[in-house]
Length: 184
Image (cartoon, rainbow, N blue to C red; front, side):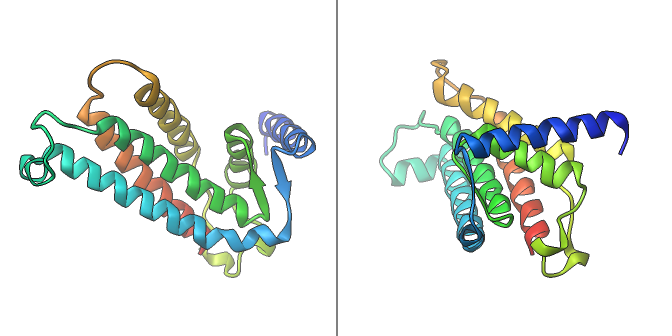
């Protein structure tokens, strides 16, 4: 690790300790059992996002559901895609016997445990050969998805671009798959 990485690592560790002290993060071995339910929930959420994407793009679905032809739910696709990524992140924390009550705390742990360390500790993984690191790009995508979700959720513009919804789904699918690879 270079000097910059050591400083970043120390800063992240200090932030994580502060989150633990403020009870925005909690450590308990019992949380490890939440890994699979969180991954299952992330997959369910992404399925719902895909369903809404399909309804938004297909007039026959809109008609069958009694929706107006101009109906779309691209904003909700972005919101759900972000939350599917976030829930899979909670699975990664559960794998470390951590539970988070803060998005910022979750991101700090992901960066410290999965990006900077480049791998999972042996005690957190049954099969070390399956350990993969989360790339910084994936963490960046999670942060971008959060920004997109906030824009989609709170922006009053009449339409969130279809392309943003497509990108959010692609990023979420890739992110969840990567977390599953790390944890299996």
